Image: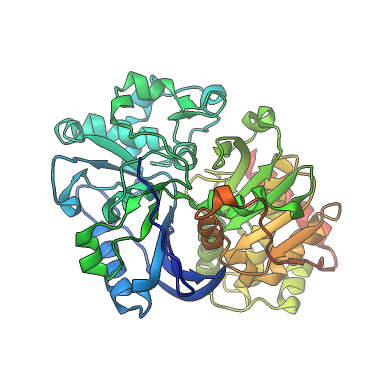
Length: 476
């Protein structure tokens, strides 16, 4: 087990790498405050199948570290990434850049569905894993099953299966590790109640490929000499096991007195909108589509409901002739409500509470403000997901939708019995990941929250009824 290098000084900086589905961010934090932020687009590339562009990600990271003037002062490095991604690596190959036995498969690749019938024979029940059946490669177990069936020789060359955050920790010099938040993210591979691998892992003979379990806050070692030379990072920079991105957002609330003693819900928004319920009841999850239990950094199951909020918002804006950069105005939202201009699911290729439905566009082909219609859609979807969780107690909104205050205010209007709070920063994932560095030494986390005043749109309840009527029509 690797020890933690100790370096003190007023200039020490923490680096947080956040790999999301559509964007990559590298942030530098000092004394609990963001010092600098760099980002780039993230998109899969073609190949044997759509795959993560690992080489380009590495090149961008190396260049960004080299160009940042305070890289030599970085004492700690933490990784947080999207879920449903793992690396099949061969540690017999010395050059880590070339050690992938197979490229990292993009979880939106629908070709994985070719194995669905065969996979059903080995897939564990929801009652065991609290992981729902999802489309394409969103169940990591299904991805690995497809790879094993399709490329058996290359699959068998792998010495380890490594979750995505821990893959990057290893690339930078850390020990190989497994970690529960990525394993517990609708993989079909983890049993939250017993904190062990599922029957799928044993049946497919993967258990010996899984590295030792470590805590998200464990130090896995320090930056290797080769990486230090390439990036400018110091060789005594500590590397941590890291965490699934939505769990990083949730982590801050686990140690916060601001949530109270009862149930609460954190809404992490980005490409995905993921609702995570603290102190919820996992026994009620199976009755709703795309509800599941993720697993927090301490291994406890967390009731979750999801939809692709950022993706659907962009898709709606584009289909109606707009784009996501258009500002949402109060008057445009009120007009959409008054005219009952609405759209219904699904804009995400099978995800969310109405995944697989054919969308309806009950509005002009090119309305003046498509972003207003997309805003109402996402607010109603959040409201539905809260209902699916039987959510009570305070609601905390994190991430990309903070840039759309009217959307958050509509959520507050739709949930009059629940107080809604907005994170005062838009880096909840990053600051949550940063909290791993001194996790065991920190008794409580405090961070600024702003109360969200409910909007007062006229006829919102009638608009909501019209939206559900249209959905019911499409379902019948």
